[in-house]
Every structure is written in C-alpha cells, then in structure tokens.
Image 1 (tube, one colour):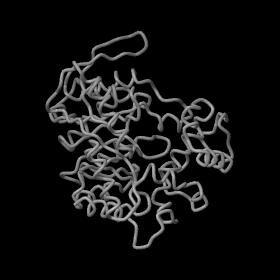
Image 2 (cartoon, helix red, strand yellow; image 1 turned 135 degrees about the horizontal axis):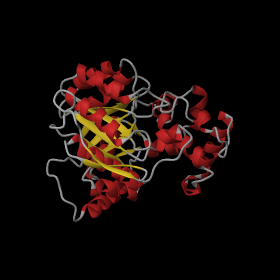
Image 3 (cartoon, rainbow, N blue to C red; image 1 turned 120 degrees about the vertical axis):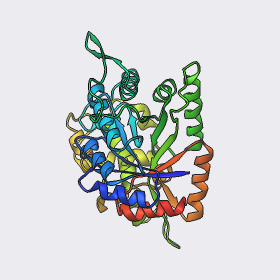
Length: 354
C-alpha cells in the first residue's frame, strides 16, 4: 500500500513536504478549513517549489467555501508549479462549514462543482450558475498563467452513498476520514461501481481510494491506551466528539449510533467547552484547535473504543495485519495525520510500509 501524510496548512509546511519526499512517501496533503488553519493554496505553492516528485493534495475543498472559477484557478496555478502532481479532494464542506456555524452543502451542489472543476482544469468550457444566471465559462488565459495540459487527480470525500455516487458518476477516487472498517469500504466501492454504470470512462483518470487516520507504533510492553497513544490519536477522537456535539440537536441518528460511554463523552465535552447542542455560537467553543494536539486534560475523552475505530494503534505485526486487510478491501493509500512529532511519525509510516 502507498503512504502519504495530511497536515495543517501553515508557514514552514514546505519543510515537512521535503522530508516526506525524502522518505519516499507518495503524497502530501493539507486541509482546507479557513477559520481553523492556513490557506491550502499558499501552503501547497511553497511545497510545489520545494519538492520535485511527491504528489500534493488539498483535502478537501468545497463549493460551500469557494466558487468553481476561483478554485479551478488555484488548482491550475498549482499545476503550473508542479505539473501533474496535484490532487484535489472535494466534499460537501462538512467540517469547514461547521467551523463557521453553518451546514454543509448538498451532494447535488458538490457534483456540479466537481464537474466544473474537472472541465476547467482540463481546458474545457463549463456551465456556471449564479442564481438564475447561467453562463458558459472557460479560462481566458493559459500559457504561463495556468496549466490545463497535465491532469489533476480528483477525489470525493465520502462516508455514505450520496457522496460516493458522485465519485462514481464523475469518475473520481474516494477519500474518507477515519474509516477503517474493511466491510464499509467494500460497500463504498460497490456503490461507486453501481453509480458509474453507463458513465463514460476516462482511462487516464485515477479512481484511487485514500483513508485518513493516525498511526501509533507501540513500544515493547506499552499500554495501547496510555497517554502516548491517546496523544497521538486524540485529535481524531475529539473531532468525532465535536461533530457529535455540534449536530446532536439536528442529527440525532448519528448520536444514537454511539455507545452509551461515547454519548457520555459528548456530554462531557459540551460541559467542558461551556456550550450546548443548541447554542448558536457553539462552533466557537467546539472547534478551536480542531485536529490539533489535544490538551492533557482532555485525555479522558479519548475513549479506547473510539481509538480502535478511528486510528491504527499496535505493534508492527498488528499494524501490518490491519493495513493488509484494508488493502484487500481496495484502499490504495494510507494517509496519516500526525500532530505530536510529524517528522518522526512520517518516518515510522515510511519504514512500516517499505
């Protein structure tokens, strides 16, 4: 299985990209969460100039954040800096919208956005809508401004049938966050194949599957649920608890899927952050330091059951066995999101999958 890394966009991120390339990792991604992290296009521009081989990804942008012309211009500009090395993840903006106190967009809007990006980034015209106005648009400048000759890889962020159907119809790959259940991946792949039936195929367009997680390699006799493991995986667990807390009032189905101890952790998180599921400003309390290193006082919220679900923790043999199972389920690339010591964690990943 291939290996890659996802980090927050910030000044100096290009140094991590260089190190990832030296380690032989396949891809280097940054998030697109405007009110929580830096700008992904700025970050990847620095990475493009500092690297030569590694693929560079945005994971993920959304029509709820950017217009198609603006996003396509950013992508095609990156493609001019790093020809053929750009990956664009697209999604409904679940996290990036909720950090604004807003809801994500619809699958239909996502599909229109993806179609427009694919067209524009390949040098084709596309349909652009603003309200009742509909226009055909295309790049009016090419040459050194943007690169529409080398292909850009597109992947759709998907956990359920609506988004994965977009991936099938648009002939894209899939990226999913914290989904380590091989059976769930088989279901996603089946749904993508079903949605793709009758859709023209582009033989040169990759349809790879990526999973984002964290990885903690245990030392001899180390507690798999000790402080070190909780610190390495805690950002993933707290992201799920924050989502559950944020949506508890309007998405009961998700919260009801949680175990009783997990629902209790959601309640404790709300109390600890001083907010409620219906407070209009709850996003300002739940999402600061989102996907960042957790505070020691929050380690008790990092439940073993959620660590087991969202992250890879174990001995070398344990990890290789789980990764092999994921590969057999059709996952092409394992992306880790390190927060404690990114260079060391990237080196562990590279060595593990070498």
